[in-house]
Figure 1 (cartoon, rainbow, N blue to C red):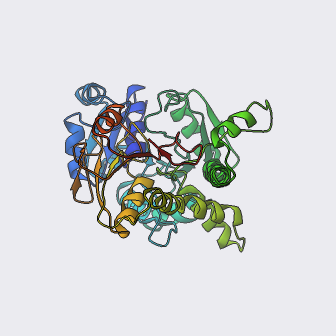
Figure 2: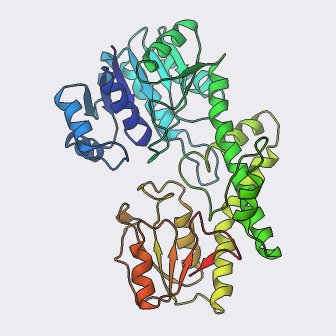
Figure 3: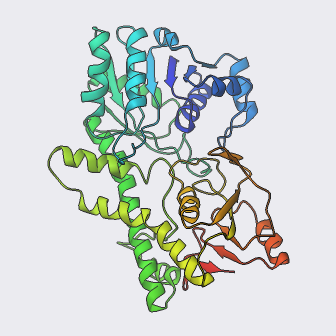
Length: 405
């Protein structure tokens, strides 16, 4: 078993660190967020599927060591980068976290260490961005591989262990060492011909979903105007046993992968002079769903939203998690407020956002909106009070959507 440093202890890095530690590796979980590390040292995490006992037992047994100390890289034979790769204000790749992680690795890494990038990025990131940054300071031979993460927070069916892994390396030695590591806790590891293929595969699988969700969203607008059931039509189409996969409409797309990865692929295409038309259209379609829904809410109420008190239930990007990354619910709040509405929200898993706190479910409001309801008691409280409620959750986009209750 190996000593491994995992840079970044968020959804991806922590899940990886705990999984690898359980398989017998000695893991240094490194993060610049001292508050997060303190919480982990106490065994606390809000990541679904990871319990307090999981973490504490591994810490006690010295298999998992949360720390802010990057010098632990010097003790590791494998260093894994699992930091955020968001979009900037122009919705272009922001590799600042990746840059800082690479520089810190270069400060402490030792010859022969395997560097693995799990952070999602455009094809060529490992070869043309990470390796040159590290090599510029650590002027000795290292091994490099790319194994893009496939973490789905809250998914109990597909986990770290049974989700197939894609792996590409810059040398056979790097591939062999990385394959041996991942095979110790992943049931299936698929080796591809280059890191670029691994990087591109991760982007393409989520671009596939982004484009098909956008198609479903556009279809829901068409079906609403014509007057037939979106969901019934999609379910009927899905009875075809070949050549079709069902996707359903929603208020928008959230999380780190689907709304972001396609923009990394579009960026890579632009670098070589190719315009990614489908990607750009899908991004625009999904981002505009919130504005479309708010306009429909205003028409339903038959009056402006100015000064109306509105409460939203569930602001994470999907139910059952506290993850706010790219959550369309946040865009919904901002769009409603831009039209003069007084918006409060309730989400027991999130607790705080943007300096605001989750509010108890209220009855003295003009409208309740279900985005990601935590439980059915939300409806019971409002139904007893006669509160007008609109459902814009993922399963509501049907006859004349959104669904008014």
